[in-house]
Length: 197
Image 1 (tube, rainbow, N blue to C red):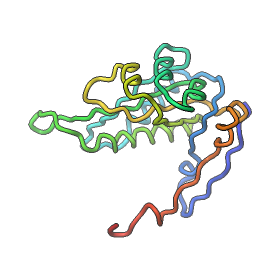
Image 2 (cartoon, helix red, strand yellow):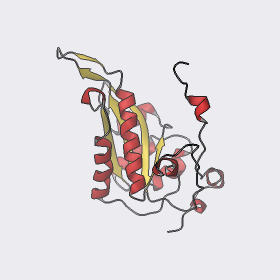
Image 3 (cartoon, rainbow, N blue to C red):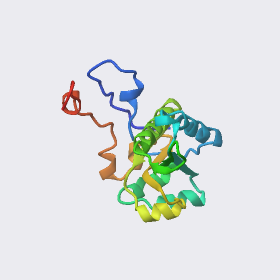
Image 4 (cartoon, one colour):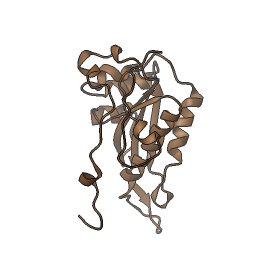
């Protein structure tokens, strides 16, 4: 396998290496994923933290060359159509919008998106430990993706994740190849406040 050397990102404060090492490549090799690998990724998401243990995330996945993969891929938009079809799997990340309260009444689950984001991050870090790349995309046609996965009412689509073995930067079109590197992060001074805004 020939893959682009990654540029080491340097955190400003000590953190576990998995955090700055994780990024979202767009180039994938033709290696397939096994069922065991997919189940391991989904299992990692399963253990994400969840308010009141409601676990609102819903993940719909398909392997390359399966009809489900083709349907999910067709719902992508923009540059995502160019590269995501080479991934070994596509995983749709959605959440259930409501939850049963103590009176067994369906009410809005205000933490559904927050918890689902935690599940995606768990999956992404698990992929990294397995030597895989995971790239979440927000560029998709809502109606087409909902139809592709038969999304039930009362659910929200969040992203599609492309997963596979990272491929060489030379496999990408020139405009995407120029962007195939880990991105930086804003300093803490821009995103955090001590005590109050």
